[in-house]
Amino acid sequence: MFRSVGAIVLLIGSVTAPTPSPSAAGKPTCDYYVSPSGGDRGDGSDKRPWKSIEQARDALRADKRPQKCDIVVNVKAGDYVVGKTIEFTEADSGENGHTITYRSADGPGKARLLGAQPLTGWQKYKDNIYKTKIDRNFYTLFEDGKRATTARHPNRTSDDLWSPYLFSILGEPEKEAVRQWLYFKPEDVPQEWDADFDQNAQIVVWSGGSWSWFTDTVPLGGADFRKNFFTLNHWARYSFVNSRSGSRYFLQNTLRFLDQPGEYYFDFAKGEVYYWPRGSIDKVMAPTVKTILQIAGSTPEQRVQDLAFDGLALQYSDFVDWYRAGWISEGDSGYVHEYPVYDRQIEMPRNRFGMITVTNSRDIDLTGLRLSDSGFMGVYLLFANERVRVSDSLLENIGADGIKVEGGYPGEGDISGHHTITNNYIHHVGELVPGDAAGIELLSTGNNEISHINVRHSARYGISLEVRPEVKDEDNYARNNRFSYIRIDEAGLDSGDMGAFYTYGVSNTEPHEIDNHVSQMVIGDVINDPAGAMPDSGTRGVHMDAGGCGFSFANIEVGEVSDDKYQSYQCNEVTNANWADGFDASKMEYDKIGVTGAFPYPLPEAKVKQ
Picture 1 (cartoon, one colour):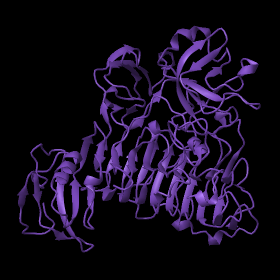
Picture 2: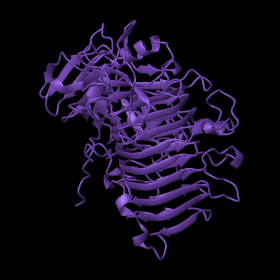
Picture 3: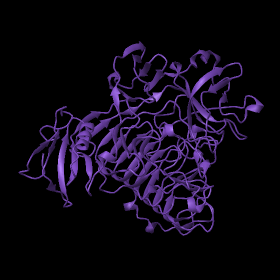
Picture 4: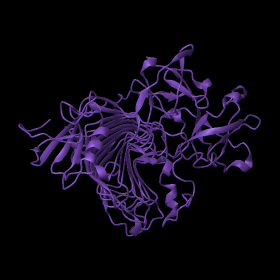
């Protein structure tokens, strides 16, 4: 139970209090234990461990004597099923200059928090398809650590890609601007499918016609096969046709479409799930929660602080029944804001969550984590957060953004910043929300250090920093960010009008003071999947969009692109970049770019380019 010998045991309630022992940093440290074999009557000792992180949290919260040591909760190797979000508040903060750390005691990734449970009771439906009853709804599914595909038409090219697509058409001239009726070609959706489009069917669409900017996932309200259009239950982000193109889309969650291994269909009305397994039907996992760890103070004045999570693995979380990025028009949030147009930039409240969600916090450390198979964001820092560190972590197979930092509305207080995001490997992001997906997305936040990052395989961005072009300089908080030793590969796979490194509406008025800095960045090829039939403008290495000023770039290398390696107004400083004459590769510190040798996990293998 102790790091020192001869400690005195004090029993106070259900907590056994160890005598503090010195840590390597010189601070006194007290150790407690959690184990899958722990019990309800555990006291947190090595011999009588707690059975869950929740039990440890509650015991420490109830033990209110002044904290005199750094508390370490050693979570032993094994699986911990999370049936309800584990919440930490200001009552769980470290006190008196000390921290509380929940760590994987047996090494990185050995203690696993699983936000899913096995589905059981399967019976053969027909051929290779099984069926079971379920008592809850969920919106993504996994088999043996791999995400299943909602049965769709047309079938996807591969597990790694989203294509191919169908294209909407202009069915009636006066319907060009509509966002709730999508007209289809008769040959794409045969008449005999009419009965299949019930309350379970959905559409996934890059709304906006030729604008491949955002994806909407929307339940269908009905299908009219006389005029060949679908009615959507919610408006999409943009209209479905513009002067250049219809919108790319596919249909999903209809039993008719379940025609290959790894696909499932959920009949929400009857509470039945159908699945064609890739391997064993006994290894199918269904999510139980959208968020596994929630770290949230009550208000910006009452913050959770001095709390750390080290080496834990978090696997599986849920998505939502319908998704749209932001509100459609300014002011749609229903609240009065200095810049109501920011309603279009920020996630709606229903979508403000991640596998780890942090808000109203200060001095939180998320280190050595392994996050996989999320339904939505991986790590989501929402609104008032200061000095959060995300480091030495592996994020893989993420539903939307890997790490998202979302500050508050411009002009209403600089409430998010001074974060450190370093030595992280993030791959396969945007699996359920390819539109606007990024390995790391920063909005309305400044004074952040982003370094030693690998981002690989994204439908859209690798890294983005965004505000709005309408925001005045004095109300823009996206300042003094530093990006260094960055490697981005396989970005822009399924979108256009983008850059692997992207900014939007940053520094919108002259004189464009240089206060954001990017150095030592390598971007590999940024080429669309050809089967995606991209109607939008091409791919770029660096895209400084709608303002995108006040940056310095030094020692940047970009691979092949379908448009420009660098697109920007003449308002940034560029030194030694390979889109300009005189590029000197000897100034690139290739050996330092990406994660360092201290990264605690084996590096994922990238596909070999043929």
